[in-house]
Image (cartoon, helix red, strand yellow):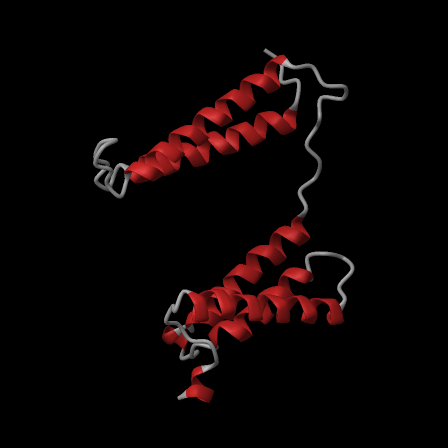
Length: 162
């Protein structure tokens, strides 16, 4: 059988892989029954549904003819690097890294760093727009997580708040 749409085939393969991984991971928790669901029930069902959806997409890619075969292009290394780096930097700044003596920098600074580093993924970086976006994200996150949900985590750097 020939693959008639590479994009659909590999997207379905990715969905199936992630779904199977979640379903297998969910079995380490108590699954329970439909009437008395355990903590593993929802991830198990969601993983199975995602795997089935991926299989359907893969089958469609083998059957439905496309004009050019929807070939997959080259890897976009720059955006991939900056988006992953932005998430890693966010995590490190939010919680700190005690093993090297880096204190928690708090949510506000972590969000600004996340926004700036992720913006570098695009070839057209504009500092003013990035800082405006960072301000909106920081204010919205503070309002949602600290004020409304009352979650306890550092908002400002520990060397400022003590």
